[in-house]
Amino acid sequence: MKTKLTIRIDSEILEQAKKYASDQKISLSKLIENYLDILSNSKTVDSDDIQISPLVKSLMGAAGSLPEDYNYRKEYRAYLGKKY
Image 1 (cartoon, rainbow, N blue to C red):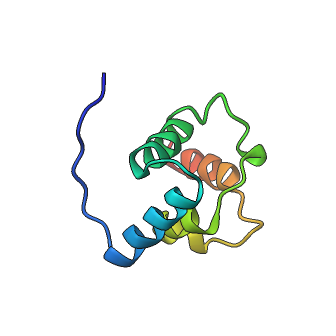
Image 2: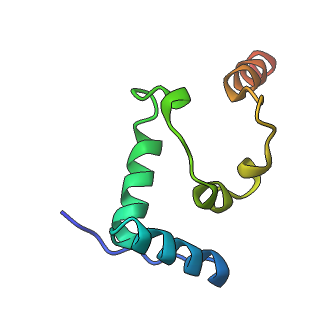
Image 3: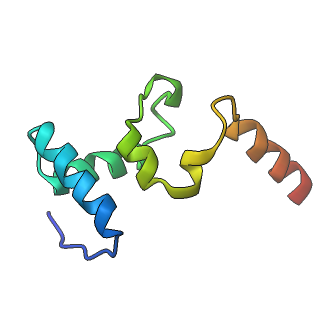
């Protein structure tokens, strides 16, 4: 079942995303759906095998500015260790 979603996004990023989707010959909705599917199934997908395009990195906001060698799993484990 398909559901309609309304989001607010920077107009420049939206135009970049539309161009990217057009270049890939898919709809913007399908592009976003595929990305969210990958995110929600990240437990079963080896994230080291996924290549993220510059456009998607720009859509990620602050996460796109992390160093290439940033190990989020290690940081998350450290966070949980402090929390518990």
